[in-house]
Image 1 (tube, one colour):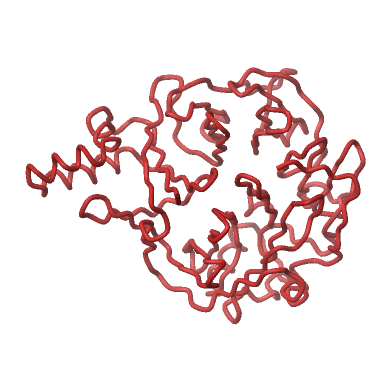
Image 2 (cartoon, rainbow, N blue to C red):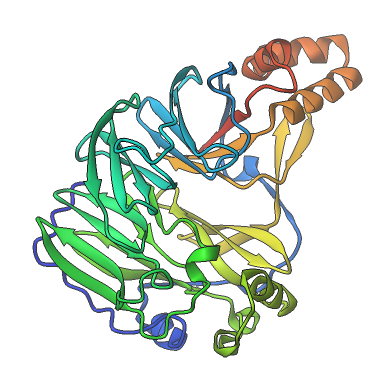
Length: 393
């Protein structure tokens, strides 16, 4: 999607936290969540194509945790924060390409890479170091191209054609009076005033921009309004209405000793909060997640029939068995939702099936699910995770 923001028209003059009613009325589409329960979501009812890609494991490519995955064309980028703050690069088939690990205080080194995004307008991978206040631009295979200054308090970003959108952490930089700054050809426009900004929002909401193909959405924690970036405008697109199950706004007037005490209060409230991972999978399906009672819930919303499917775990039917997964989707690309599955867990599920299956069933499994069978015979428990692609054709 090509976005040229010359004159940005913004009708955002309110704070989401304190005027949810106004947001609900002005948002273009209302998504109402009337019942939240512990259910399993059968992925086969949402998607009709599944594939598994194992990420290559060697001494240079191993990783333990992933805080963000970015998919673009034939590359997969994985940002790890701890134990080492690195970016791993794989090709679309899972083959290892490179590792970006220039951690340090030197001029071409970063101290805290907190966000990455593929800038399709300039064909480069961009990482944000919010400690140094710099953007690091890399080629698609991880070679450093340039370093550019960022601004203090930038928490997340979205590249645009001839510009960029900054999302500010106003708890770090109290000088910022707005949450968003849109820069187009060095001209700035600000959006979403933050007069009554709550200090723990960015601590609990690491990613704020969600993109899939030609759709871009912005949201931040404890605000149920979803904004779209489209057609040279930033505008309200959806409002998630939890009704009586919404978190009471009075919690934002309380004082807490730290983030843990705040999150505990949210969980004890027995209410729904912190919408995240909002993405439009296709013209008919929207996906997002939220928290309630320490549980993360997932929603598939049918835009045509205005119906939603809600659950806190996923089930995939493989051959004649149902495999349960509690992993959170880590990325979206085109019409696909991507999960990062522990390879050892996958091997155990296949092994259990083999032990129960007849000879003919096992032979059929090997033919129908050749990708899973290859993982089974070539992997060990210390290998990198496996990517599970769920696609709606």
